[in-house]
Every structure is written in structure tokens, then in C-alpha cells.
Length: 88
Image (tube, rainbow, N blue to C red):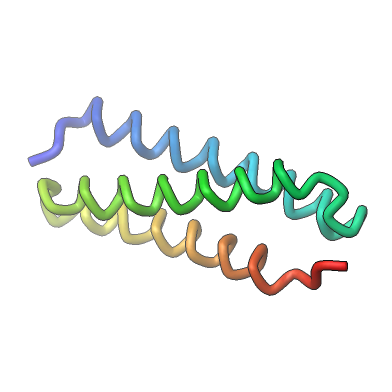
């Protein structure tokens, strides 16, 4: 079973990646991807968080897996939005 501390740290990492990616998405949407490096870094952060969630799920109990699954869906949704955003 994953420890509560490790779960909390991972969830915090995911929330940080989501906040940063949302900021980059908004900037990209409004400024036509003026900061490509930041946008790419945000996508990488989401992917890293997603991979870390998948690893943590292997040692999580059922309740923790459900929490990780919900977070994984949020990460995927934002990744998809960022990927399909038109790039001028």
C-alpha cells in the first residue's frame, strides 16, 4: 500500500503540473504559442505526472487507485486540450 505521505506528495505534484499547464494553455490560446518552450515543458510535466501516477497505482489500495484514476483523467484531459490547440 502506498503511504499517505507519498500519495499527498504525488497529488501535489500533479496539481502543480496542472496549474502550470493551465497557465501555459491560456497563454498559448491568447498569444498563439508565443512561449513554445514553456508550453512544451508544461506538456512534459503533465506526462511525467501521468507516468508517476501509473507507477504509484501499482502499490496503491483500491481507494487510492480511485483517487489516482481521477487525477489521471484530469491530466489526460488537459494534455488533450493542449495538443489539439491550433498552433500558428
